[in-house]
Length: 405
Ligand code: T4K
Image (cartoon, rainbow, N blue to C red; front, side, top):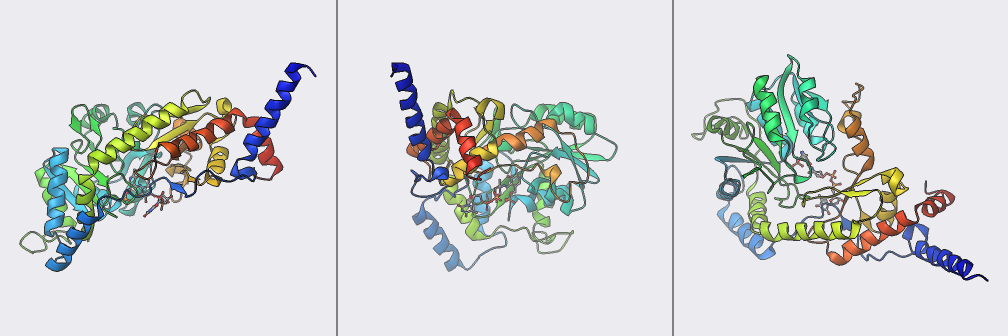
């Protein structure tokens, strides 16, 4: 037999063996436990238990207690912002902010975001107007924003997606020219910066999430940050049924308070910020190293989330097919954000033209990264991606034959 043919047979055999190792084709996962996107970072248990014990012994569990105040001060100091108002979650924080700013009618926002962004507006009777995003950073495209401004528009709501800041200056300039408020959903961007300032200092105010899945969490929780003292005072009353500090109801309000236990977790996690930031950065670099050169895979900048964009033509397989393979391998990837918010009820009653959003909704995949994910895990995950893309036609054929697609 010619040497060439021998090599072909050997490589076919090797390819088959390699593909047989994939769980989707009957192999065994190299990961003994499932890796999740958004697996909570743990923090230091002893410190949390100490704070939790103090809270229980103090018998002051909520309603602007000392730990909430300490958490607010610590965050304000870190962000170098005048006011931080702790709330029970970012969704409610956004609602308080919309209310406090007296927004009405239409709010321009991206459709490529977590559904909390438009839901927060809709819930209080505002109309989300979905705008396309920039392909490079997945954030609001100012050129598209400008086109959507109408006499009904009251605000522009930017979302700092994946921890990367919006084009704050351009959005602020458009808002100023049309006399609109500009605010930011910074749920994913704690620790991010724009120019020489921390995210948290821009627009009328910004809203962070400290949900369990965020790098820094408080089980559930949020912070509204602002340099506007009047707005801060209003928000403080609103989150506590409209009560003033002297205990008199002065305005409409709701219950958006953060419990002491959550604030305690927030403080514990804040202490870990530097360490967790280093882990997240190292993980991002590790992914970048191992994903380099894989056709059709682009890793998005920003250390807090590992977001890849899969170009089906170049990769030879779709985002959904790759996700399916990885999930079988114990890698619980997330298809954030698919479908886009404009395609979800109750917003799917208008035919939005959002070409970049549409494309990203089909192409983005978020991979696991947290203190639970190390370089060995990343090597395993990226080896699988490299393998299945290298042999994409065979992988797809086998998937079809097995009824997987
Ligand atoms: N704006 C933006 C741009 C946002 O991204 C978010 C929240 C908000 C506003 C609203 O903020 P909050 O009101 O929540 O403060 C998760 C989070 O629930 C959500 O907070 C977050 N964005 C969103 C991006 O992700 P899901 O539906 O993906 O969560 P879930 O339950 O599927 O969990 C994700 C993964 O994390 C799972 O694979 C399991 C793992 N996990 C989760 C939890 C809660 C754990 O391992 N342990 C846990 O305790 O929304």
